[in-house]
Length: 128
Image (cartoon, rainbow, N blue to C red; front, side, top):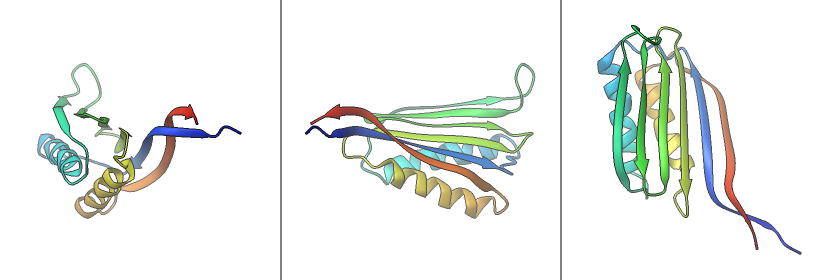
């Protein structure tokens, strides 16, 4: 009998009431994403924050921390209070630790933020 064995996992987080006040808040979340990676077993290889001023797309930002094990991303519609985060890791790095750290920090800084979704999906499924 064969069993499926994942080689990675993806954690998705969706929030409402994430009303970021501007670039200081965007930078705070970006720094917090990098801290979440640093406190995990993941290895950061690149990071980028792209703020949107509302002139060509809704105000908010997109942020990515590329890690040797995959990536952590965040996308925010600041005027709508919507925030989507995903934590995708491979190997022995647990994305739950990164996601939990981000959630804890978000709820401390923004007490009205509400997590609407948290899903974990196994990735890179193989057969034993």
